Length: 338
Image 1 (cartoon, rainbow, N blue to C red):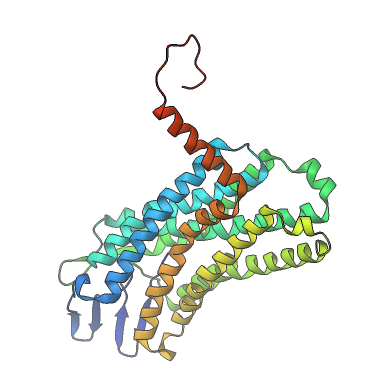
Image 2: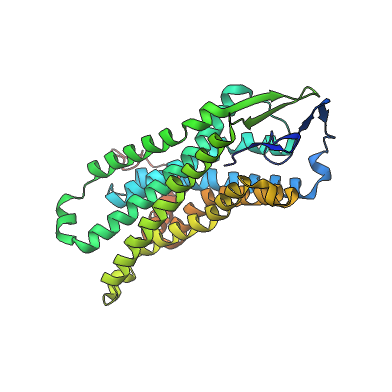
């Protein structure tokens, strides 16, 4: 997920049109095209392309696996509802990642105005839905620990599904700016770029700060409070502290924090871009954007390696399918397998 900025640098309008390169500088004399280097000749560009391809492959198929297991192979519970929703959010991110990979490698946007807006909105929805779901999971864990009897009587899959729908609607609402401000620009050399054109500096500031507060700051503050209560309540209960759901959720939250905090830091730094070296800022944005993308494939790895239920269902499902595929056909009056 990358947000682009339009910033005025003294008498020069400096426009970032794509993820990782500036395509034009507008001066009083007119637009001066910059030389468009091939991605093959730039080590950073090639490395980021390869990294994003790996993220796409692992995230796309990894999240399909989690959706298959949690949605079709495991008994429906509140916990599997949370995990299924997170996997669907990460899958949505990975499904649109190839558009950005092509944009990185070719340094040009080929997919038109609609996909420019919709791709950015989809990636924004992933960020907001992920943190909202992690917040919901943390609050659910906290309530279950503080009021176990009440939670046992009132927690249900139907209520969890309703909360998930609300979280997705809220995430979609927070992503509306991507639909409004994303534009396709035709450069002086005839190439096209997909970028975010904020109307004013104040609009840029309000959008970025609001995204940070709603999509990171406030949720993580509440999550820390919830986990502090949980740890305090369970400090003498070894069995509860070693439970797999608690450990998996903790790992998911830590992964999100590590992947997304650097991104938000650099996006906030853009608001005062004159105070920083431009090369450092743009290179940093490239790196932290890929780090944020990596969160989409880390989650399924955490489910599989830390969740015993996921491991068991994965092994049993694969083994049964292999046995069924390799078994000899025998005439029978009834069949247990389709």
